Length: 156
Image (tube, rainbow, N blue to C red; front, side, top):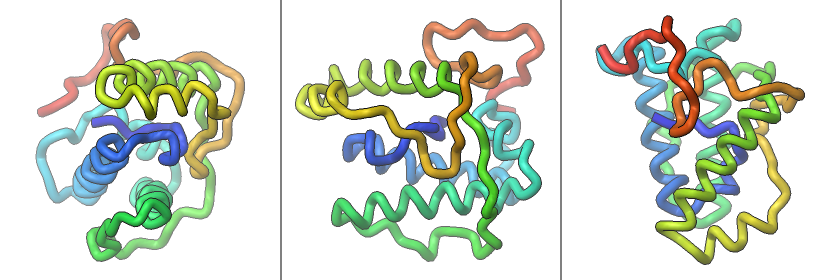
């Protein structure tokens, strides 16, 4: 599961579709509709806010809006009917840079044209996040980041 802190506009078509699917899975996890992925580290930042389901709903709204801009039809009926959280989460500059590098590595393989475009774009965060100076998040498990000894299992 990858819930990007990057703005969905940075993702290529397969990345945007995958984000939609994975965020819908996260929505099901937070609503208690699935047993798997309950302890996934990507969900930590949502669980730490006052309204985890509302924050994820706001996150998904932006993903759906990006899909609409591109002419895709992501079904809004798939979104839980919960109050959208109007607050903002934080993301550190180190986390954004790590995600950008991770995305660029993926694009270099599957979409060289998108890779070339992304190299020229200014890095933007998903609108749910306020960018602050800081290191990679403690919940991050991307290749190249060390696992922490007290990490819970990713899947049950």
